[in-house]
Length: 205
Ligand code: GRF
Image (cartoon, rainbow, N blue to C red; front, side, top):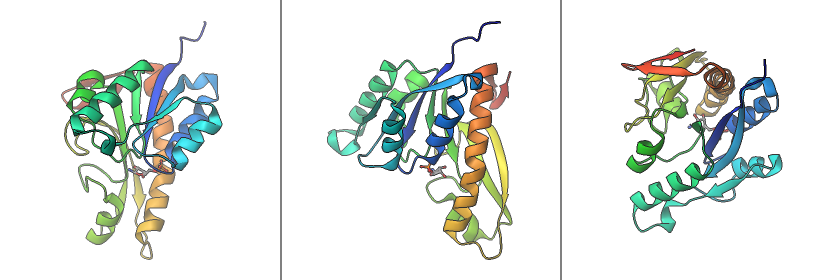
């Protein structure tokens, strides 16, 4: 049977882009069922963009500070992403909240990865807050983006043990190992099998 065409992924990054790299590596296998068609960022000079460059993937930057209004930035981001006709948009360490324009356009097919077990510790400091709270298990969550902060329907989660001698950096690095695996495994399944969302319940296949 011929392969259906691979799902088109646009990946948004703000930093080192190790989650992006994991997706790029997975997409090298045609059986994975997806391809990264573009990479977008909210800042210049980051390793995530260098990874896109090295992989020969089109990339673009929209900085909030270059726009008078945040809504204009959101609109420009949505327009540029749309040019790449994504099936899924993956926010992989993208440190900006996507706005109403963006979600109106791509809502229900924007995925985000968060370094905590939702609904615990939403926001920018998941690993630090888990550590400060003294939890023994934290982890990572892949979810469908809605208008809240890390509140959207959960697609997949993985648990990571907190060790007695962890600091924020060691804990976050260990979470990121799980996060990359979860992202690659789950996005591949979503691309190959499709998914539905019903009353917050996400089902793949
Ligand atoms: C990930 O832990 C992501 O969940 C968080 O920032 C990290 C990004 O890592 N928001 P990278 O840029 O993919 O290496």
